[in-house]
Length: 71
Image 1 (spheres, one colour):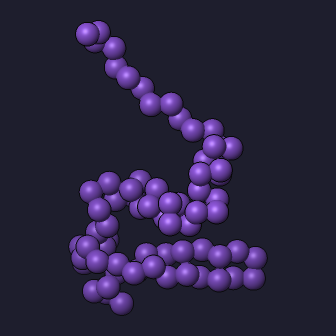
Image 2 (tube, rainbow, N blue to C red):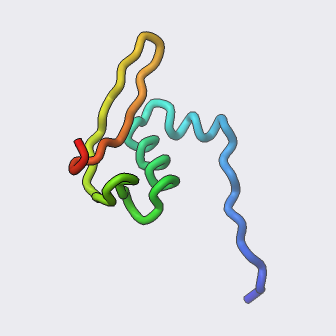
């Protein structure tokens, strides 16, 4: 067994968009895991329960996680 450290290959922008552009749940889970690797936690109150808010604008749609406790 070698002592080499395995490095994960970074996905290209093309691969990223192929995996996440039309799969909103996958995209949300990816970014949620980036911000909260141990699970969602509200910055204000520390609650772990959330709901998804869909914000529809004239040119784009975005999503925000809202804290169930802070509503």
